[in-house]
Image (cartoon, rainbow, N blue to C red; front, side):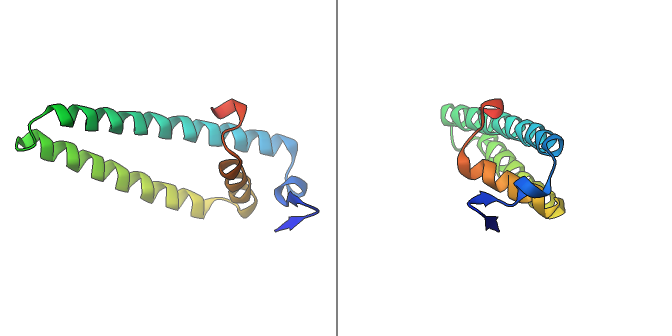
Amino acid sequence: AEAGGGPDFEGSSSEQERARWLREWGALRAGARQVRLRRRALLALSLIAEPREWLWDEVIHDLVWSSWREAVAQGKREAALPPVQRLFEQHLSASGDPPCCA
């Protein structure tokens, strides 16, 4: 998978293609961050609510449903990616957020 110490996506994709992948990955990360913030807010609000109220169940259902939906969508997206782009995104995830996506 790596030749000469570098990931093999470097030689098999153009600079323009990698820039597009980076923008796409950054947009996905930004969207995921918004979803995580929303879930945190829901959990914080649920701590204020009385756990026996029906709203508590609604919060838990919303959190579980959105988490499951996100996991399924991410799995489908990753399976549909070209192998080179998948490797590129795995490399970005392993190396932390690049400046564009922090």
